[in-house]
Amino acid sequence: MQDLVYTTENHTSHVLIGESIQNLSKYAPLNRSVIITDHSVHSIYNNQFPDRPCFILGEGEHNKTLSSVSRIYDWFIGNEIDRSHFVIGIGGGIVCDVTGFAASTFMRGLPFGFVSTTLLSQVDASVGGKNGVNYSGYKNMVGTFNQPEFVICDRNMLASLSDAEYTNGLAEIFKHALISDRTMYDNIKANIAKLLNRDSEFLNYVITRSIEIKSDIVSKDEKEKGLRRLLNFGHTLAHAIEKTITISHGKAVGIGIIFASKVSAELELITQKEAEEIEFICNELQIVSEIKVDNSSIKEALHKDKKKSDNTIHYVLLRNIGDAFTEQISYEKLEDYIDALCKYC
Ligand SMILES: NC(=O)c1ccc[n+]([C@@H]2O[C@H](COP(=O)([O-])OP(=O)(O)OC[C@H]3O[C@@H](n4cnc5c(N)ncnc54)[C@H](O)[C@@H]3O)[C@@H](O)[C@H]2O)c1
Ligand SMILES: [Zn+2]
Image (cartoon, rainbow, N blue to C red):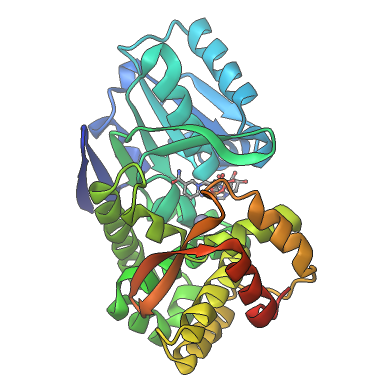
């Protein structure tokens, strides 16, 4: 087990990589804790949960809302929860986001921690202190920056993940390698079969590196004023695609990664051969799929991106494999690139 500590302006958090849910009592005051989870995680793992009151959230993005949070507040009140209590979220990114938001806002903030049960939430969602819910059709539009006390990443719990959910995590892992670790990229390239077969040693390596990369960025820029934007690599196009068609997040990110790499090659930052290799690896990792959507819908969706300021966007490019940076580019330019380079749309 590895205890990775990251510090932000006001907080120190522990990410416990390879820790077991069975050891929750080491990190949370169980006699004053309540649990938030979802139906699937509850049905598979509730025999490993501590015997504490448990709120079971519905699954899917349509449950990541203020009305779910409001039901949790009512449940807190019914259970006489106050600031002396501790809230534990056990689940994937949706449970972690809703738990972090409800705990951060109820009575101006209760301490909280996560048992992160999907690959995506272990390497991404549960680390970094962004706790958001969707609002009026906009993803993560309402939220807080507030760090968890701890995140338990129990690898054993990943065994029950569907291939589709597992793949969503792989896309974020590959993103982390591309933005800041050339060696990790080379290792992924050489060990694709191990990743697809969920080889526990290699998985441990990529999960650990991902968490190190993300927590390092978050420690330096908790509130996304600059550096943290690098984590959006591949996500500008991915979010536009997700707004336009039904597609898994991982596959949308895969398409976004390929596109951003091609733009980087077009600007002669990386070579065409490197962009082709990135595309090849995305295909091997099964984080892309053929989609049928017209460019005009994608472009329309792009404009709804909440990160837009004026008519430009902070777009993440590769200076090299393992070295990303952001460049402010106009939407018009990005749209030109979509027309020229995006073979999926
Ligand atoms: N806060 C952040 O910084 C951040 C970063 C990335 C993503 N996110 C958010 O995370 C969410 C996506 O998270 P996700 O991909 O974990 O999805 P999710 O939470 O919807 O979980 C996916 C599905 O897997 C099931 N599941 C969870 N753990 C399981 C297990 N161990 N075995 C079997 N099934 C299991 C869940 O019940 C659910 O049906 C999105 O809402 C996204 O916005 C947040
Ligand atoms: Zn993502």
